[in-house]
Figure (cartoon, rainbow, N blue to C red):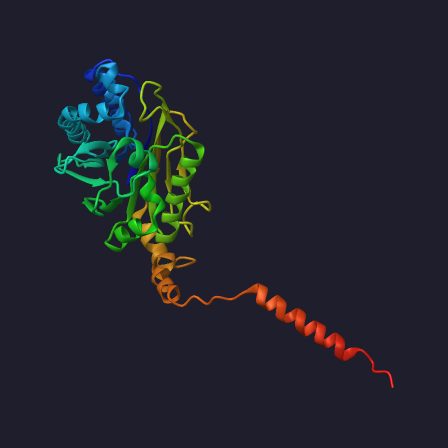
Length: 316
């Protein structure tokens, strides 16, 4: 399966048509290069806030409220593009107001037949929790597609192993990680998490990064990273587990062919069995033995003093 991961730049938009033209051009380029699955980053949708007045797009809460009127056309645009090009699109995640009147960070997956599924972010960052008022989702999902079952870990979720593990144990063979990070440290946390999930589950993980600056937005003012496709670190795959990686902060598509059958082969007959051996950890976690180097050192010192006394010749 041919995958395209976007290093997608956040822009200040003049009108909806400009956004539609931009997204259509990005999707067309990936389709022309043979991509069958497109992954856009976390919170790329926040550039739509620039369509509103400055008092709205400069307000964290104002953005969230205003964006709700664009959710339906946002989904419909992605549906049309998925149908037109006969491919799957993971749209940039969108802050959606749910029935409880909370906002949740939701990533929609659109199929070639226009069907839609989504995964909500489960672990919120301090910024989302403490300043922005985005709430955590409650359910881990796996999504069936014609090429196999996939899971989605939105940004920070990739840093918690049991989310992806739950998905792969439910049959997911590919993990998608849309991300939005404003520091080099943040980017590498998600990258390291993504590569760790590929290593321990012997599967492919695709990270997509939002890039560029938007000084007009408190939500996505600085965005850094390099989109990439990560693989199992084993026979038949790159020695560093990186199939493809973009140039840091440069808007572009990152392309690669994901070999799900080959990953299954590694799980069955690889150099190591990370996926199969995962449950072996559980046998050790309830049997921690607490030892002290300090006590051992003190005992050795006492034994040394005693031996010195015994070795001193007596005077008679």
